[in-house]
Image (cartoon, rainbow, N blue to C red; front, side):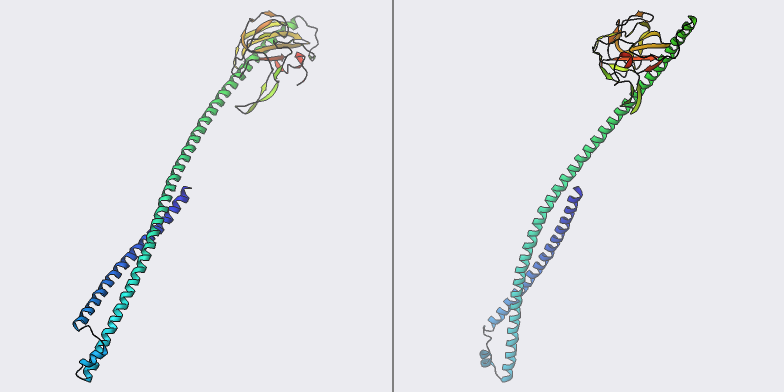
Length: 347
């Protein structure tokens, strides 16, 4: 838009310059014509004065009467004819000069009108160019604002990604520490079982519902399934190692099965967590955890019964965004999908 306005403005400026040059030439020509008319007027006046001095009569008959001889008549007649021709030429030049002056005046008026029109167009194009400059400046300002906004958003996203990565790293570290601690518990249980010379058959699969509803919501309602899911900020898939069960903020959370509290503490990524050891079931270690609690009400080493209060639902922990119960089941120290162990049908 600005380039178009500037080109149009330049074209009009060239036309205006040409028109002004024409005006200058026509004005100069008019001045020369005026000088010629003045000169011709002076010549006509001189001829009129000469005629007056000669009696004002240049006729052939007058010259014949005044001649003293035929030679004198011939000379006089020739002079009279020459004077008449000069007078005729001067008068013709005078008429031509007057006609040229009228034409030059008309041309000058036309050029003057062209100049006025071009000046109006030039003023309009200047205004359009100024508006185009203002529009271009406004567009650039908007572009600069968008760029700054984009940079700010990118900075926010980078910050979010860094925070999400930090939380993920902390959660991974907590998981690794937790699994190591659970393995210690499992190793101790094996040693105890060996000392008692347990007759249970090793390797038997655990099947059927083993846990009661750990929430205050009846029937249980799963809000997020077990399995790999996309971390929206980092854009990577991570294991969601349990299922999320609906429980409102500060609603009771219950032990799903008899057992012993292994720990009740805060873990990064899990928030306030209660881990319960349910001992050996069909020759396998069985444990369950209750995470994101607002608070817990049991202590490590405490014996709990199925349905006993262990804490209250919340959203503690870096990755939790709403109140719920994150429930996990561990068999031999590894997480499994809790659905069948809660008596829930496949998703």
